[in-house]
Length: 430
Image (cartoon, rainbow, N blue to C red; front, side):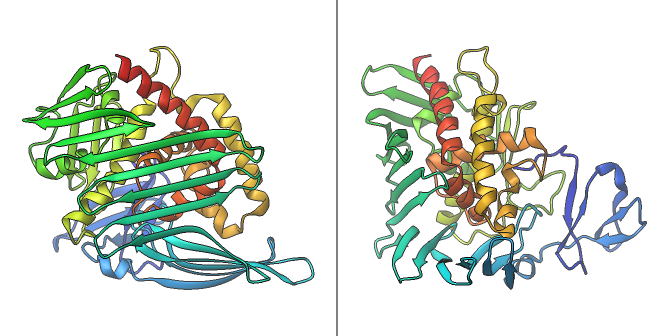
């Protein structure tokens, strides 16, 4: 996620066709100031042009727009409805239809993408020319409040991703994540459970290995249910006193495997609130390795406590991925994002993706390729997004990018997951 100190500034301005104005380098800004009327103004150093920053106009900016494109490069017709991304990363899609044709102009397949029952997890169906249908992704919510997410993807090289996430109304959940190559070799196979035993007591498991988690006055006690070993994390001084309950409600969804990593490399501060540097940004979360801080940005999109926790749980899992990436499994090896073997796996999958993706689809993975924020930062984001996908469903703000990453880069995800597991195993034995 974006961090303070990045080498670009994106802000929302009045009378701008794309709702935001991007300054590629902060040095290009002559000044940022507040007018007498209370509006914040940014003036561009090269052009001298000033813009008024828009505040509290969320509904205006989230209005949908529908676009129809003909991608002659891929022989595809595309119709998509999207909501502009409020911080300029990439618009996210609410509806999409892609029709693919052969060189003779005959329809091969139609892929439809529509909002599901769960924000952030669309219903995606592939329909072949003969009418055969395959559900690639589906989210449902029953009358009792139980939500189910099913995913079944195949990447260009035949690698299959199968995911099933189930969560009931009180927070009990079960997830299965399996990645298999075209020859049947299993690259990743994880089953996770999380049980709510009380307001402050929980039980989580990974592939059948269980832990009990208990929160008491800022102390988190994690008990290995097989060996009886107890680990304790003192969060008394780590959680910002302001909005403390909000942070705790999200932390209480984190499973033991992630909590235990905090014993290897402490998180000094958890903070939730309005971004101090860019208060107009919403949901602008980040991990600061320098401060050892995870910051969850305030959002006005939330209309219920359930929605608030769900949105920030996936955000926290992403930021924990950055934290884990900074935690060596043996005290000597490089961060996961720096490992050349994983970079090679990603590059191979990216090359395969480019051969079949539409121009529009190429844009949805810019967050992970380096074209948006540099290769080093992109590699870090791949680790963070993998950790998020292993533990949660994406929120709607990152839904489109997460879908394309999960569908077309399974080998990358499997390789990163193996490294995350090494750190978790080290933490469990420490």
